[in-house]
Image 1 (cartoon, rainbow, N blue to C red):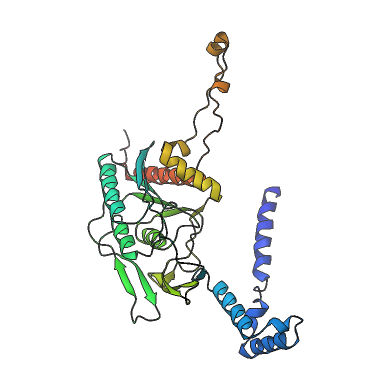
Image 2: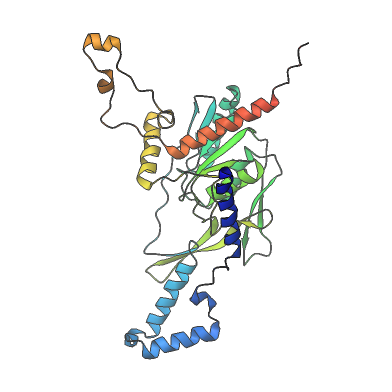
Length: 345
């Protein structure tokens, strides 16, 4: 009976949770148009700082609240944005036969590098690939995202669409050409994965059974337009959003990972920069520590101290988990495909 007690507690907690009333809406969300007007009139007439609430102040407060409520689909910029810096492409084969690809900037040069890397992976019989999108700058080139996805998805497969209020029908994007890889796919994403990279990730999850590791993406899977406000600030806002089959959406909530692995900004930058300089493997696989042995005692040395670096290379946890996941799925698939041995007589 003692072993059943924890189970009883779990069942009881679930039952109590089902009896809880739904969370009531916030007071502001519950107001109708008449109540909102009444609240504004009262504030303008009787609030202690009402003298400062002229038409411009009221309009500014309205715009501030509107932009905040439309996040991440609207932002007021002080000046035009500088073009995103190009991010380099990188690929390598890790221990265990897992291919690693960092697409970098989604552009034609990177697409050519992707084709070459996938051809090399095929020659080495790589059956699992990790795609690291944390170093892919935000882009609204959804046609290019569709080309990247076409390397992993059967031709003709619907990938995603762009829907707006001004166009009668959504713009559809489908896979084209012959895919170059059909094995296990694991993607590393985070809160900076945005725009075309989000659409690419969603398409691979939907059409290639890709798994996502890391953190929820930005939710900026949209097409943006910028309007200068006179000679000063610029209003940037979403005019179309990416949609998936069945009216699935990425904007504004983003894509949640299948396996959540948090990582702070400083560690993320150090891992991505370090991988370019030293290779990816050193941030994925733990190095075996050199231990004190009889030979070192005779020589009067201590290899544990000698081998210690001033700053030990840390592990890139999201990437490490992605490689582990890709390896595990690949092994299970390989095991399922092995022929059964006949029972010996």
